[in-house]
Length: 492
Ligand code: GLU
Ligand code: ZN
Image 1 (tube, rainbow, N blue to C red):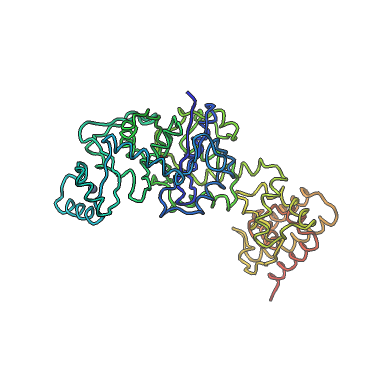
Image 2: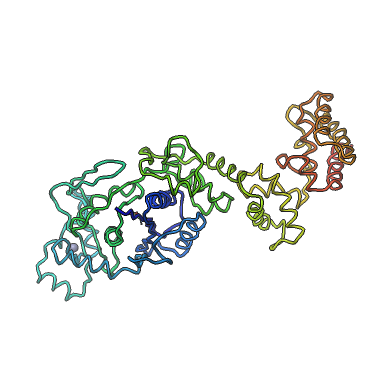
């Protein structure tokens, strides 16, 4: 059997971690089994639809390097792949079920349905939902409604007896009594719009989808979908509902835990390969130990067997770690072009870069590469090069375990060692040794010497390694800043 799977998002919001994980699992499963990955846009909910969401869908997949074999833009033999362009198809299939007695027209007004709902709630009736008022209308009754100009919806006739079972690759058999399935759901609305259930089932069939991999929250729709496949006389695709993505506290991942929109991660400076690698490991593993996978690896080795049954935890720290690893592995030229937009946005460099700025950026890359967790870290790490905001609060210069007097001495003697050493072409290691020795003489920790020097030069306690910072800044400017820092301690 040729595997055909789909990612079928509704463009009603930004692509989030959970959705992208579904896309990746489908994509890698398709690639690894020599099958096809189809993108289908389920945009039948026009109230929640937005152009921005649709653009975000395309740009997110493009950023990740996920190409679909069939779908919008690229087309394919079973298109169109955008549901709002397929309304005729849904209408035809809904009417087919009506003709076969498996669905029926319902003329109930919203007011009537609301009244029924209220009565059920008040009488605490066991029976909830549509009361099947129109399930057996006579031709005369129908004609009467039509004459009144009422536009009907089409409802699916859910059997009241028996059970429906569907098999899930991960969860096994899931069975539900038919009478527990919400009675007679709408397939086609009065304005001709299909509901999710109809469009989803019709399209999965017409697009020859073999495996449906989607979030577990769709499990409750499973039995109804199976009944629809049976009503049409179609084979039921294989189901594989994916475990939920949780935050560390065991609650469904949401904004409370941090960013969930992939666009936010992208803006902060996560690399696509880090997101792809880590998100694929949220609920999947190859052998329980391998952590690094390139896209090409996963296109070969992804299997359904590796999907975990238990809910998966999304760990922001672990993602940061992956991102740091990928930044370190990044080629310097690529990293230059990746950090440039952040420097431009901060107003540090021009867009496009001048020739001098190009050189500076390429000099910045090697030291920042070692320190960034996310690309946007380049801004605080290099701020001292582009804007001079001296620290005027003495306490920032004073390291833990040191005091004002020792800091003053450390800065004074330390600056001398540093400047004369660098001017005299002394080895960095030897200068460093002398600075450490100075700490010993003053009876403070090494950082008691380095911290005030670093704060004076870089205006910050977190920045690049000292000698790199001086090199990037220039010795004259470094000297000026050291003297300025020292003067802070020498006032009165
Ligand atoms: N449009 C649905 C969603 O947004 C698709 C569910 C499915 O894959 O069947 O999640
Ligand atoms: Zn009705």
